Length: 382
Image (cartoon, rainbow, N blue to C red; front, side):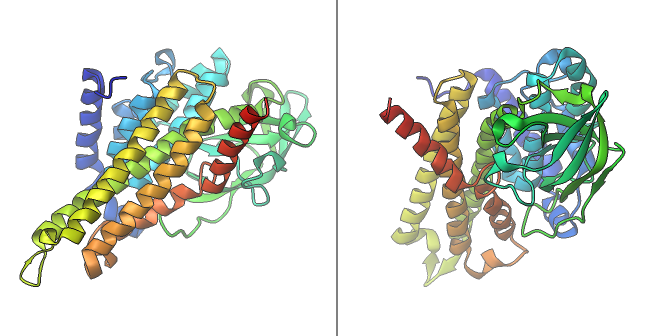
């Protein structure tokens, strides 16, 4: 068990950090305030290989590991969690096509996703199907060499701006076995989008409903066999949970660093805040809890890379712990800033708003507990 990063990992970690400092950090506040989707900055990330991190090389990807991806997303999110999180979702959509698509689909979709000539979205949640994803109602009916889609998806990152929508739809009966995965391309007849949602955070990426009204999609856009969709969706979420946890690590780390600098410089009662033992203990606890969360995220990534039988449970554990812990670290960092933490001249409040949703998406943290408990109880009952 070696906790040291390899030379290659240190190199692309540094590349991600330098990119984030140059391309994300100087603009993150404006993107948040003006709700800018930073297309050119994202394409600059793609040029570094960050848009198809674990897609195979023959389809334009970087062919890195899940642990490598966690290192990259932590660095990106330290500058802008919102933009890093969109990039995470794009990577998830790209990987699902690469992993479960046939050769024609891989070569048709993945190279342009890898360069971000095309942007990708993942479409599972519906207005009536959130945590109970297997109850989704969007219907795809076969009509010759096309499917006709009717229904809608909710809270879709990139909705209206993305070019590729990896969608879970119902082609069969009720339950998970009736769900299939179909790629819907922007411009498909019958595809439209709802209004851009007004959100607490994640303002550098658009969020909207994706609406299907007799939407015609070629059968050739189905990923895998009919009935494979739920399995594909859940496989995508294992990696997505690691990535969003890593984004929480980056945001929390940035806030801890800011809080440490602030209490070193800020003076009250005739001395620096950092000289008060209570505040020393506070940052010590924040750093310890952040490091513990990081170790769990890295263990989950390693587990997923090895196809460990407990990988899904490890991913759920890491996502639950890291997103809860990191939000708490950010909240405590805001408290250490006092009133300055609450105003928009300082970045802490933006990190707080951006990290809050990490406890909801990619499966709520309550559902993460369900996943862990089911695994433990199934082992107990064997």
